[in-house]
Image (cartoon, rainbow, N blue to C red; front, side, top):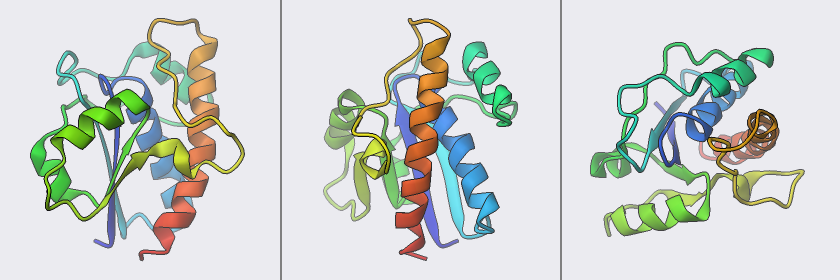
Length: 157
């Protein structure tokens, strides 16, 4: 395996699983699925073992992404040993990850949207308590970020 990427949000039922499936499709389209390992987690433990939010799944399916096999899990210290890239959806989760990060971690810990190419937005907003359009906004931002991230990750292969 060449490179590993972990997407992180609060509960692992909206934003980070969306980033996981979108990035997985980009990686597959690039023919790199055997060289890039992808996963997602949450900093919180409320949804461990649960499928992504139904609204998240519906929005993703409208664009051709399936989340049927995904189940939420919580970030662990071992994730820093297992993943080269640990990417937070927002500043709050990034701050939590910085506290958890072992001093020995040599990978990239950053905001996911730092790699977006067509937006100045740097945080993926949490759509959980908002309306249906929030889930489409999340997809728009993540699709942009996924393209830029793939370009950067290719440099390490």
